[in-house]
Image 1 (tube, helix red, strand yellow):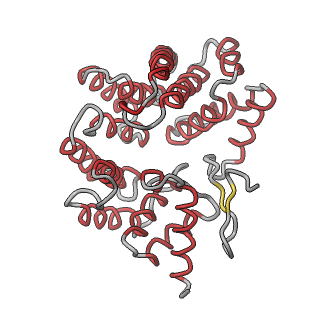
Image 2: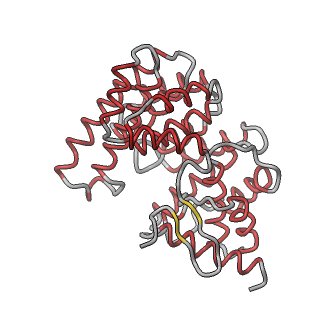
Length: 321
């Protein structure tokens, strides 16, 4: 059987869907955390991230994803009562636990017995995120989690606005925070298509050239596409948004960041959908052996295989096949 994070197709080398995206120190720390109950390497790695908030958010997300439900996270939090980091990881793990119980389908399709776990986990996560934020008054990472929680709990707009202002005071260009804010503002949660696109386009235009926020309008287009039942491309300004993103990001030198694989995957998804395969191949090549279902997960029940098939077709086309 093929390992779930390593898949191949035909002549193509295997790709990895491991979300560490090549951060070997992070993978090692997560393995020690999960397999041996040793939180020391994870603690040291988060400390070493310093004020690189994009790197720290990436590492918190990966550690949380790998260790959700593991007693070691509570043990770490009990043992290290001064740092906000263990609470930040535990908080995000609780969010993951809640969403795993709920699933990603619309509310009317969620099992009734999943709701108590979902709400209890998010309420607990919210308390942990607030404590982590108090312990680390410069760190935006727990506040990004708090924005995610605001969506899930459908907190009122004034509370969302307060959390958003707190986050952007610490990091005005926080990638994860902006993505959670976009989700809160979309029509299926607490906003509208119009508000979502206005937010995404304003953030993109205010971001520096090559910054990951430049890609945000294409995330909004995904939401619009899903709302339309995946039958169209997105909003009527799809072509303009895509051209603008490629002008300011993909055709220039994009700023490197720990989750750039996801941005490449999203652009490769849309270019593949448009059958602009040689252009999509540029993004597939930029990912190297790393892979992400960003974009593809919205469009397929088997997003990893959809990604691999799209990659194969694009690379063959670019190679003249």
